[in-house]
Image (cartoon, helix red, strand yellow):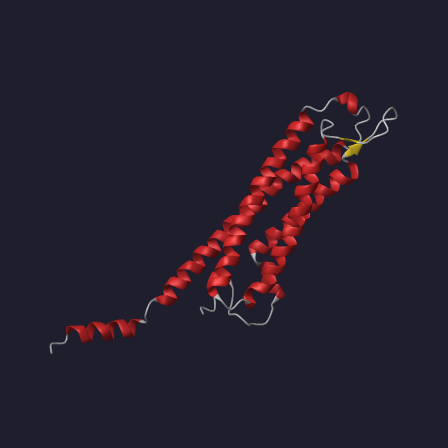
Length: 201
């Protein structure tokens, strides 16, 4: 087992919270976690309107319930995903198997890239529905700040999740190089083998 494979210290070492919070991917996870709260919190709290003439609430984004549902769903699931991978960051140094570390890092690459894509779709969807919303549906401009905040933080989330994917891929490359190096025989053994092969019988 290569102790420092895939961007972490030797397995079994003491947990160091100061090292954890200084890691770029951990910082991006926390930022993404906060952004997800802003998105689904804004929509849940102020994303639904009603008028005196209507008994039912409707979505602030062009009266499209799918737009609000998508924003809330992506926000909540991203919130849970951040918590899951923050827990993995804490547990990662305790993983003793290089193969298990490799799987964890590869899952981080795939999941982060996937969420960057979902946030891109969400940003485009919410922005489009907001643009075509009719002023008559909200004459008092209720919840407009929250609606814009959800769109803005959806946009910011694209880059935080893409950044996580890039950092995870860099960790994968570091781990792959470490694993390759660990499989090579030490230099003295190589020179000894070369010297033996050149001797005449």
